[in-house]
Amino acid sequence: MTTAHRSPLGGGPAAATIGRAYFAAQAVAGAAWWVAVFTVPLVREATLGALDPIAVAAVDIPLFVVASGLAAVLPGRAAIGAATVATAWTIVVTAGLAVYATVTALAGVGVILMIAASVAAVGAWFLLTLGRIPTEWLLVGPFAFRPARPRRTPLVHVVVTLGQIVVFWGLFLVVFPLIIDALEARWGLSLPASVGVAVAGVVVVLSASALGLWSAASLTVKGDGTPLPSAMPNRLVIAGPYRFVRNPMAMAGIAQGVGAGLMMSSWMVVAYALAGSLVWNYAIRPHEEADLSRTFGDAYRAYARTVRCWVPRLRPVG
Image: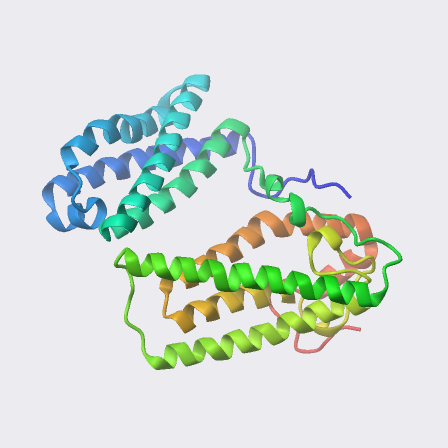
């Protein structure tokens, strides 16, 4: 199986135009933000903390605002050079501001804004330089599509699947949310929430975990493989929750993340889960579905026409 498949996040010259448009918008937004910094104390304190705005502006305006504007209007390689400067500086500022906010408990709003700017700038840089976003770069290591080793016994697949659950649920649903929640509190971004929110989170996590385990069991028992992309089932699975919806594992994972955020009363953990859903839907899913289509051919294509990706059927297929 190969992974050299393009997702919809691309489009040649049209994509480059989108990239230029983003850098133009970033230049305007950056200029407007600096006006607000020097005229609205609340904006200055929320985004810069106790940093000297004059000293920061002396570096940021040319490397962020001006470079972004040049990336939008200059031709060819000159635009790419300006975009590279603006994107690199955005990432540096994001990292530096995150450290500053963590040490001082100031400028938390600025960190969130810069994280969003960094993600968007990197995407725009790829659109401008490559004409697309190379989502296939995400498909490495345990996320590279490969079938499970043949002739493994079902017991081996069950043990491997349980190991995957412990590792990935532990990282993505415990370790990362705890880190995010701690940063949210340190950056002064926590919002009050009632006990009912935490109780709802417990219900969501338990329900989603049950769906995830049901999905994993179906892939392991019926598919001669595991849920992990690097050890995918060797048979097309249309059993268990896959009779109702094409991606119950993804739905379960997203719901688990949202539930964990509700349990912690952390809006940033909820945002983390929803951001992960966007990455999966727009960057990973096109590759996965292309791989399944190559592997299982007409059987998978017929299944995909009958069973929706996100909205479960009222009546199961099969």
